[in-house]
Figure 1 (cartoon, rainbow, N blue to C red):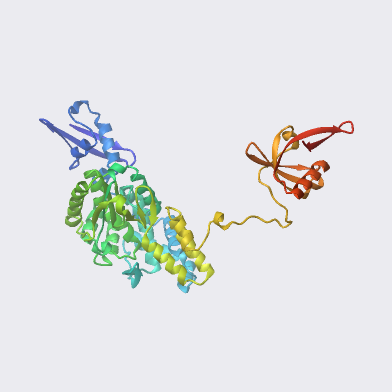
Figure 2 (cartoon, helix red, strand yellow):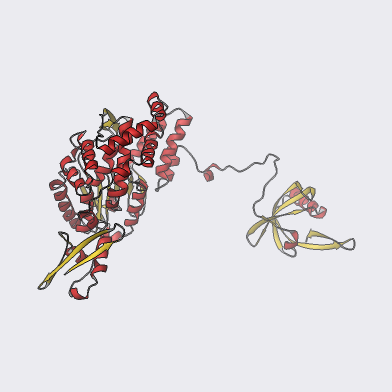
Length: 501
């Protein structure tokens, strides 16, 4: 049985072959046996004639998170034209120059921007572009020494322009939802929110498998990466340009190249789709080469780990660090994305707390301390570490300060709504406090009185000499607060006044 299906989002037309014999039914989609996948989803194929294969295959494509899309031999061309578009090059130029100090080189590049971009467009379009070379230096990060490769401005612009189109047109659609490193709108806090959401399914997240890869970028097999790229890119000019970029550093990928972030993510796409589509792992998260898998028990995660290691070592030619571990989530917490996450709460990672404490101790400048505090608050506000923020910074919350507003005129300000006296007529109220000599639009020398009625506080303003006199006497007697009923009286024919009764 043969049919053709169309995937509207990608405009890819492919063929799904369905074969059946005896008691078993097999679906082979372009060489991939997906029958176990469908069975795991509860799609029993007892009678293949009754199945709507278009809907079934569409569901497979959607649930596989792009797995079929990633594995079918769809190849993309006509990408060079999009790379050398003026708008794309200008955006790349702006990205590279953003935040740079006004050095002589930066001023020169900005002054000659149009010529530099025109020359760069010609080199890329003609297939002559190649990185000129890089400067190498070391940085210490969390006690680890890393070698960073820095390219000249011109090469940085070129790599930004190439990678922007490559991500937008080809590679972006291959990334599963739960990979977060160096991807637009998928940062640390997006990953944290997704992890916390997964942990709500407590029965299926009792245990965690955590691992990372040894010297990931420097261990990437360039030949494997190039072969994977050839499966997706048929533009030979662009392909040769990518090869020159990859081969300009070796072995592996240069950490300081902008291209390495996207190409590294693409390199692990094979693992991502294998975990999600082939093994059916529901809770799988990856940030660069840091990987977290959640499961109901140790046996399940050990089985997943054995299969994962086989693919990583045999197909990707990478090595898993020996410190991989499987542990109960609640007992230890998941140290991932800068946080330690459990089912019910999240804390900032220990070394981040220590780093902030040391920096605050060393920094003397008030301005610099504000920068450190703002940075740490960006971490603390996303977890249950707000009290730690106040502790490390010796900062108190407003409630703990016990500070109240003291008006310049020395007069008391009472809470509650301002109520017309007519609304309190014949009501039994408790007079709590008052303030004298208040100026209003109606005149001076008035009293504002705070009252309580049915547990609710309010205030009213009175110019009644009788009320004012009584309030002064009671205050002198020290009998505040007191209960009373507010009455309205008529005097002088048609005049009215309010009094305490």
